[in-house]
Length: 468
Ligand code: SF4
Image (tube, rainbow, N blue to C red; front, side, top):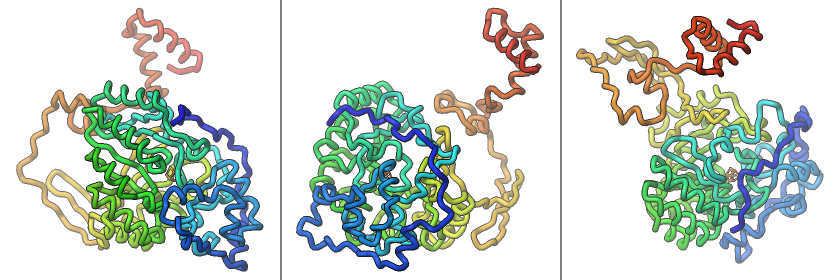
């Protein structure tokens, strides 16, 4: 391990040209030049995950060895200089056509549009760095924390939310950093769930990963450990018996993986998920909604069906984050709602993920659904189903008593539930002009304590703005 700080933000400029209005070169060329589909599966080391990692496609020259039809697409190098490229030979073998009709190609091979950087996209749109009390640990939700164990992935997904860290310096957290994280977890017993992520933690050696798991497990207040990994999708050879045996020593351990398209559900991926499930590791899947890849209701249905068949629970469908370099992958939120409308009624609830928008500025995940409530009153609620059938649900004749506010309920984070339950009467944004005006009036009425000099400063600033 070395002691690199994972929070380093390498991408800082947004001065790249807008995307071309023409078809990317790869698309137009591919229609006339057939892709050379790589055939290294005959290599005796194909099933050795370390061989797969050592032989990742990292450069333009590596890429055209696999896909000579991309030779003229020199723009790939320019993009890869800014956002690193890595593709395992296994994942490259899933590319059937080197053009934008191929979802695996789109997720793996750099595209010119990544350099488009409108102002509303950010290197860290979820503001993870702001919620990082110690380097490498994001503490946003009260009872959960995310431990960024490494900056390395076996494949650098073109749509990655952590483009700012993934792949720039392939390094793992150091011993002092792990100690600081463990100390923080001990000092915060409200954290019950630790997600080990990165980068991809399953690119680490089993022994290094075990040191991290053992450190987290040594914190007695932590109930569950989750591992965020795309390895079952892009490097299924990594799921070895040695690994699953080690992981199962630290139960309860859950796996969050990241399948985006049915083409990723291969015999190898199925075998990897079976090994994890057989070791008692429940697997959830987090799909990102991606334009031209899985933004079709039928593709999403096929994906979700394939996932549950291999004991992977579709957990989240993420709206694409406002991350710099992924504008070409974004869809409107309405497309996600349309997909959710389609899935309900066609798939069992077990196979339907929760569609969420992970809000900019660190607001966390907001679930988004089609609206199923047509009307409601204290006596009834009118609902509609996926077919458009409208039904009345009579409410209980005896009104429900209000749940009395309890001290324990108050100890949680403050939110809309507390308002609904009567613990507080409102949530008011701070710093609005109306609030400033009210504060100034209070001052004028002499209601503010004169011992608070900041009120006088506020009054002065308001008066100079013409407020009040
Ligand atoms: S595996 Fe995850 S962290 Fe790594 S590049 Fe893909 S999406 Fe990003």
